[in-house]
Each structure stands twice: as structure tokens, then as C-alpha cells.
Length: 97
Picture (cartoon, helix red, strand yellow):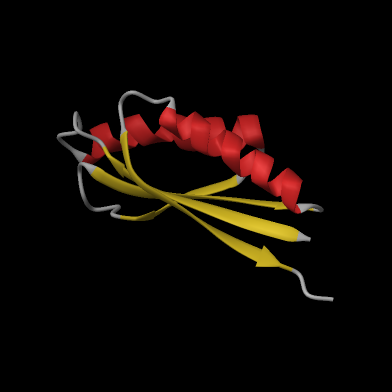
């Protein structure tokens, strides 16, 4: 079993309220959940208007499958012109036998 978490820091330049920020990040969260079947959450900066940190997690039977899913999710996040990706990092969990 392989588990991978992608954490993406975002800047939302057009947001002038928390409501506007949520309007910008909700399509990313819901789209990733539907399209790529990953677990998603906003994990930091919930109280800031123009910043967000999103986490996406997947579990697969092989490293290749997990990597393909997380690669697709990262491309998906980058495809949104409303947000600027300031950082992206991955963490891996490999089951020990």
C-alpha cells in the first residue's frame, strides 16, 4: 500500500473576503474529489482572505498509481487561473511488511 499527500499553498489575488476565497477554492476541492477520487481539505489559512493551503490524499496498491493520481491532481490545481500556486509538496507513506 502506498499513500501520498499533496499539499498546495495558494494565493487568491481577487479575493477580498472569505466568501470570495471560498468561491475560488471550492471548485478546486470539489473537482479534485469528483474527477480524481482523492480526499481533500483546506488545512490552513482558513481565516485569511487571499491565502489557502489545500491537501489532497490518495491510497493505491502501487507507487506508480499513487504518483499518477497526485500528478493529475497537481496539474488540475495549476489549471485554475483564479489562484496562484506558491508552493507544492508531497509526503509519502509506504506500508512496511
